[in-house]
Length: 372
Figure 1 (cartoon, rainbow, N blue to C red):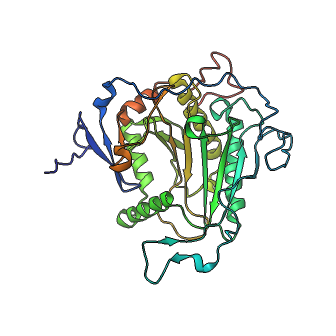
Figure 2 (cartoon, rainbow, N blue to C red):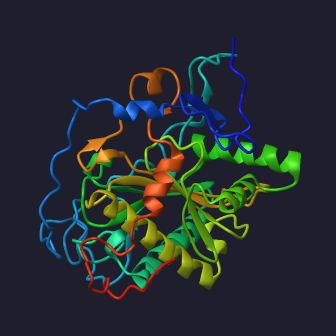
Figure 3 (cartoon, rainbow, N blue to C red):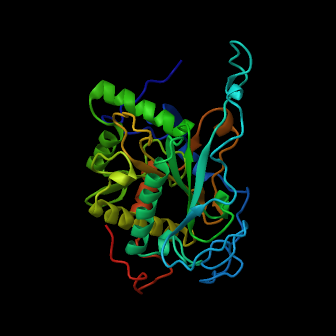
């Protein structure tokens, strides 16, 4: 027999195990706060590498160096974008139109279709030894502008329908090069997760006349319980339905569909709140905090997508320390996502951290101004 569901706006959250609903993905997450008390005898991540040099002659992404493709990087002084030398998507898949769709009349069990697209890389800085957490606000602003410029550039290709901006930071998240960079994949179809979010936002808008992310963030700001930081244009929250221990969402306070629509002021404030969040991440365990980050916005095909508000998600794996991380295995892979640390506890810890990077001490942060 199912237990009664709790209206958390009217009653306290259960102290013990409970499930939380994610309205953006139409899925549930199991929360088990008591499991934090169990002793840890699992994998321990290796110590982070020693301090990196500002320039590495063997790095494929440093200015002036030759990449694996034989191309040589310019001596860039700010951001630098180029076509990925080993792209997951290419403009032509080489498959014939007959390869698209079901294999056989009415067959829905063996379905495949060609996928085309383009893949880009954006270097955040010429310096090999920094991350966004250590860059100043003007430097991050250049990254924000590069994201918007790349979306606009890629959207002009006829076969491109969706542009996904994402960053994998740290070896724990599969990043193969420590030079600060991200990837941008433009595809002929909308990937599964953004498509699911678009559909849930469309349903919410049809039912309420408002946008889901906007309503959600407004409620979070009113409560303050899961807000990490905010400014006049953006808010960072640990989602009520977060799966990863210190997962966060960045959302604009104004309804915006994609990064290209941001005003000059909104771009500047986004840069500052990214600096504030990523510095807090590093300060949590005084380490270069790994994560995967991605932006979700409307497709670039010119279609109507009601209720689709731009937002970014950060998925950091660290749980107890710089050397212990969360794995999605077992129940998470066969049942549903599960977490130990509650979203409220995670937000409280992040909110209480300084936004001056721990390596900077009392010194100025490469010219950065205080954030929100």
